[in-house]
Amino acid sequence: MRRVLIVDDDDAIRSGLAEVLADEGYAVTEARDGQVGLREAKSNPPHLILLDLMMPTMTGWDFMAAQNRDPALAQIPVIIMSAFADDGPESLPEVAAHLAKPFRIPVLLEVVQQHASNKA
Figure (cartoon, rainbow, N blue to C red):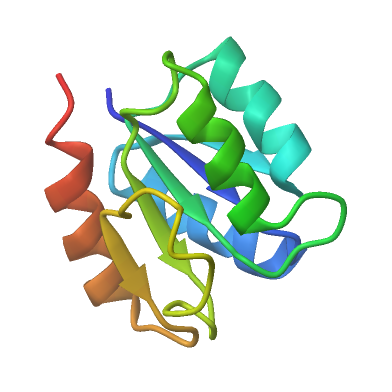
């Protein structure tokens, strides 16, 4: 079963996405900020990370910088979900996709299916 980690500080968005992805057969883990997300990713590496950028405690940009420094996590594809999807330091690694909020669920599912399948 493909594992997806959702890192977003908005409880409604996080739980709604988790429900949609679980209905599609994904094992979903949720995190309310980047620090919790890193702990979750290290303890049970997902096949894909859905990441908000604007979060308290640790932003999505900080999360990706920390992810990139960790060889065990660096190869996990990240899909950015944010109204600011194209903003951020140019020094960060490439992301698998950008979904500008609000996005349509069918588009999300297509992108998740494409990128969650890339990791064995």
